[in-house]
Image (cartoon, rainbow, N blue to C red; front, side):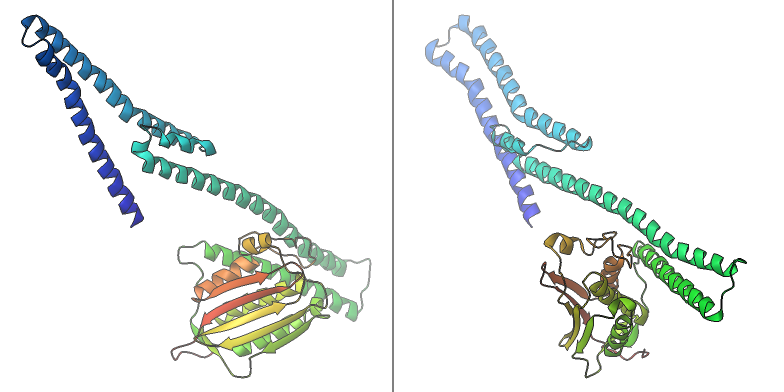
Length: 363
């Protein structure tokens, strides 16, 4: 609506401007003739002079009108060329459109200012994204090499003829190899989900009836049994009655697992993590920790792809894709996710999902 109003104003201004200038042109041409009639009466000797004066006035007026209309067009063209060349408009150029001839095109000039600001902001975001992507590429390479080096090292030890390993040692080596292989599989799965995110249809979900309360209990139990979680405290509230949602059991489990694992690895040991489930028109899941919290910059970038935040040195590693994947999964289930956090005051993640409304296969 605002755009249509701006266009109407622009058309009206051009129309009125044209009418006014035609009136002024008529007056400018008529003035020498009026002077000739009033002053010189009808003396033939001054007729040619009056005609030449009228032609001169007409010529001067055309030059003025051409300058009045063409100069702002030149300025607009120059600004477009600057933007096309990657040069953004300076902050002080807004005064130009308040000049006499600049007012005629002030909506266009304002649009160019907005376009310049948008292009500048997009360029800054592109540079930040490229920097994050490069840092992420280096990080993910390291994250893949680390478990691979464990697998290679322990495999070489098992195959070495220089040592004889007893059954317990072999079992310990194989368990470490399996653990690192699982970690690599998780990293590769993250990449696979990201590739799905880039597809036109996004993440593909298998719509089923999911027992959300049981899924949450399972995920909390799995995360609580992680070696890193031994000193953490976990509690669940509101899971007394079953709550059902429609969606993909595996993807939902992955999303809540990512959220709980983040609450563990990005906080000091001994952090209390509670999960609250509340059923209204939607089901609301709150994951609350009393850990170190995040500043506003981390919160604003939390769901950005490749953003690894302040925890790039966490021993458990990270792809910088976890929270972006969580948001994509929640969004694919017609839900929403929000984060509230302050440094030193912990973090609250709020996930809202629609309830299951139709009969379908139970999972």
